[in-house]
Image (cartoon, rainbow, N blue to C red):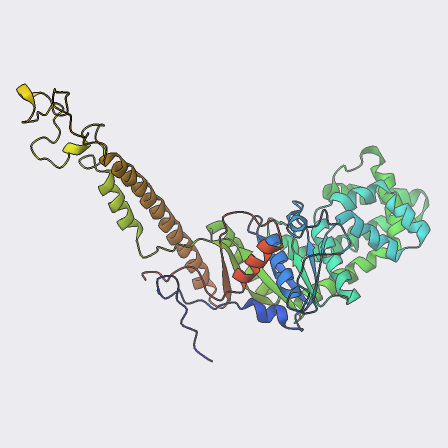
Length: 455
């Protein structure tokens, strides 16, 4: 195996040993068909997914980005008024290499409706879509969003229309939500409870209704009182209409899960250099390994840096304190000119030997007054204050860098096998394609931002 390259940061200091994630080969490899960006909320998954999609498209691939972000930042950054359940081509992309970029936002209920319409005859589909229990289930049942995201991914992959699908996963509280949703919802729709509910429609009569009531008592603990007094009737109607479709949910859930494990899929865990985000990232990494999901690496987003990291926080604070020492700077107006005189320092009424009758220095006499000694020093005091403030800001930045470095080092020590790419923090949000290109360039830069401990 070839040795790791000698990567050095600003100031020429060697960076911590961590496998570098090279994004471009991943995006350009025709065998890579799906890239899944996952991680905790608020770490930049949506922006990362959009930047990866744009970079792949401008390198010749036909790409669709599927987002589940309700904030609609993806549409804004791509210059699209709105996104919906249909992929829309993004304008302004450099297509000289023959690539295209499309984007879409998951409509959870519409995706569920499409499943019903595709697997039921028109009359039965209409009965299902108009059923109150189905409407509640499709709009808000726990795990439905994650399941429908994977359902839509399966639909996109089956169409074989795009070279690459980039998925921005739902803002889940836990990795389990995303990875378990297909199995969980599939098990529910094809499990024991559903079989209990199917029995009345098959048995019929009073015996059937009695059996239904037993099933409803079991269902109440799972779903609660969703539809009030009409609950039993609506569920019975729903189950009868969906009878022929339940097995399909489990089949598709299993197929989607296998798709996530396939060699053409690559997971990217996105995190910020913060303790909670990297703890969640570590959990994702461990869970992906346990499920045999192909992990490409970690995107460490919003990493801070400094062009003056040769000046330590301690030295910066010492310099600021020297500038702010009251013997040097913090004197009342009118006394700055006396600060270098050992005979008059600190005196509030020092006399000038050239003044008549020992008049206070600087007082008015018949002779023309000398220029005020405070005038040339006022700008100097102002510069000192500004400089001290900047030094303290620099010290805060260096403390932040050290904290991010320690957090990152704990993660890499625990998971040295995970390749990492780091994206420097930007001064503002990304709102257009130019900003996404900038993020893409930073993603593809094989150079971590944080120095090695003790360097």
